[in-house]
Image 1 (cartoon, helix red, strand yellow):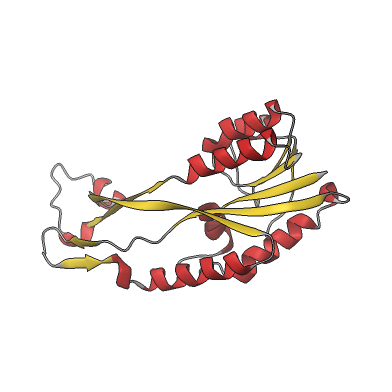
Image 2 (cartoon, one colour):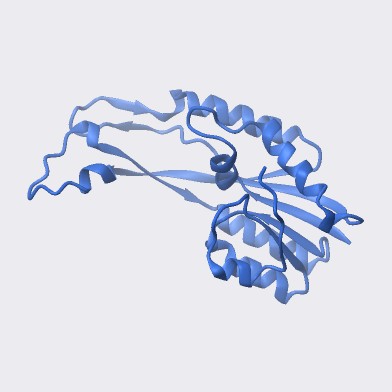
Length: 204
């Protein structure tokens, strides 16, 4: 039976890396090798690895309060992420599915909102960009539908800890596919356990 590995890139980057030491393409491909070597997949054939993430934000926006501009495109993160995606796109069996990041103004940092003062004075350091991700969930759901309805994969291996993917998990099983979940030791909601067939114990 063929299987496909679907990776929630944002989740995997958080589990394998940190702000000081971001996850690398080598670490992500090594994770895939661990998954492929799991006993539950012995004798099955890999169809493809789908990696879902968002392109780095490159907008230029105006800073509130202190004025001036913030150029997201000049941040170190952009170069690191571009290199990561280039390396993953070249890896065997990998296909990248990229959504977008959207800048939605500014928000007050949670630490400032937690103040017990009756009145809060907001300064520039207490504001942070409000950035949301678009299109990733939709692409993952569409790929699960295509893989199952076209008979391309009888096993879906989903690497995530996000319960937003439960509807896609349910769809895969309703269409006859088996759903293997990889949480990398992350605590997940019971609904994710309920709508998976096997949880693969892999810690990256």
